[in-house]
Amino acid sequence: MNETTAKHKEYFFEIDERGNVLHNGVEIDDKPFIHVFFTRLKENTTGKYNDYPYYSPSGYEINFVQPVDTPIVYQRWENDKLWYHDTLSVPFEQESLTVSDDGILYHTAKVGGKGRIAMPALMHLTEHIEPFGEYFQFRHPDTGKTSIIEPTIMPSHLRFLHPRKDNTCFGCGDANPHGLQLSFLYNEQEKAAESWFVPPSFMNGSLGIMHGGFVALLLDEVMGKTLSGQGVKAPTGTLNIRYHKPTPIGQILYLKGMQISEHGRKFVIHGEIRDEHHQLLAEAEGLFIRIHITT
Image (tube, rainbow, N blue to C red; front, side, top):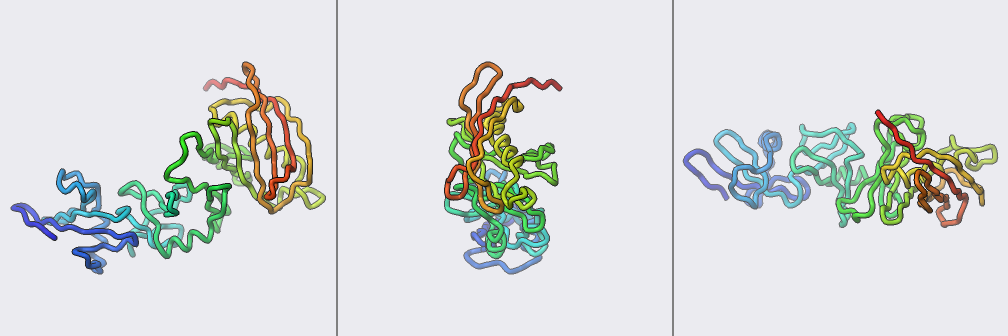
């Protein structure tokens, strides 16, 4: 429907879950119009038609917009960009991917905060999605970089610890191109951190299994995250490791660290590595000592 006022004409549109623009149930196929429509799309601040949360002004016309889901729907993933029109796109940022409880994938958008990812972009992206425990991560086909796809709704006691962009830590720093860039799931109730990781070939030892030093690194990393998840800076004081079984290369590993006790500045942390069958491969107990860093 459309209404005419003394100053302008008002039109009403819908955007379906595939990103098509509809007027009175009919899809609009006018590409120049669609380009201008999305270029000018913004939140509805007119104070009118609250059931149309967006609008796109065009001269003497105001186009009020009601999306089925999100106002921006990404339809193609090409050249590391997500496209929502033949000529409109945003840079693809894998850290911005989220997923709803019913499995709908989203990426940040300039309008509406997030944009739904539809076919064929969805099919292309899912080729590079892999499990991260009960969750998922995206592995970029060109760089190999992984990023957690966060659920849109998370239990309040759980949160992800992502690689820090300004940090060169070999285990968890995003700024180290040679590092592991590990992500972790932190449980505030248990004061525990866990991660899932497939070790690459460069972590190999002389016997075709993981080098013992890398086993120690993974244990130290997940144990330390039980404290950094609390905002505590506490480097390792001692680390006692028991190697139960050879740790394989190229297979999914489960890492877990859990706080055992706290005495003043000292924290006792337990860590373990298990294989995909949940067999214990290595475990450690460590003493971590809180420090205060002043800048």
